[in-house]
Length: 373
Image (cartoon, rainbow, N blue to C red; front, side, top):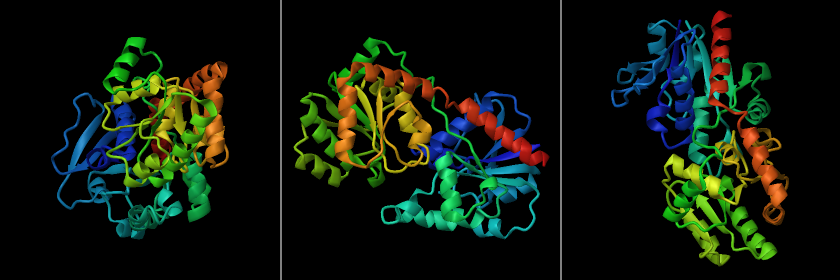
């Protein structure tokens, strides 16, 4: 039996979470002998299947060819849509289909634009055009967190029995606490990082709450009198609003901005940090949260959306979206070595529960159940 996977994020979303998580899931399928013939469908001829993907095969779509029509012609038993950003399907056609020769699954990571319509106008348009019309037509929705599942039920009236949660994993081969002191010192030297710093890894997006973190950090400095720096890691340059806010707080000499880090260097930056901060207002899952925890770095996070579900007891959670409360939590960790060590250890153990192997196994079980039924 053939499973048809939407491989478009491998081409179009390589620098986003959609592309990275799609790649990791398919890599797990490719490592193992599966009960199905798994084909990755991509448009055009630019992308080449990695040679080590032994158990996942490549199928190229002709110009203008949709994934559902190609999968039907190829005799696929199930089609898994990974991406609504740049869909390989016509939403109206999928929604109108009364009969299909295959089962249809879609992964929904979040419906964040629905919560932030002013800041996410383009994303909201994509949700409305490409995702909302097909939700009633698919056989099953894979949500990446219980928080996303509850969002779909509450805001879009999707029946709960139609949604299965499959958590993302963390790359434990990359993000871990086994780096040597020399490796950590080398990355500090190359990126001009001080001995003590707080790190926040995220896109420079309003919902990521950088303004709160900057205010919290300013208060934290006054609380503790520390020389601990703040390192912001994200894609591209810092937005003008954040640059202005840093100047307003007179933090120009304290805040370090990094971007374009190779993944191993990113892991070392996490590992070398005194603290990992995660003040995001809304996450479908929260991969950077887990990455810092996997590196054994004590973590302080805002208890919003999926964060409590993912962090569990592995982070110090702040309930209020309040910079003074967040500053107080960071100060507690900095000033209590026992708490810092305990958080680092609990975070590492918690992160180890989220593996791509488990995600692949659960996803394959979903395929098997749907195909056999």
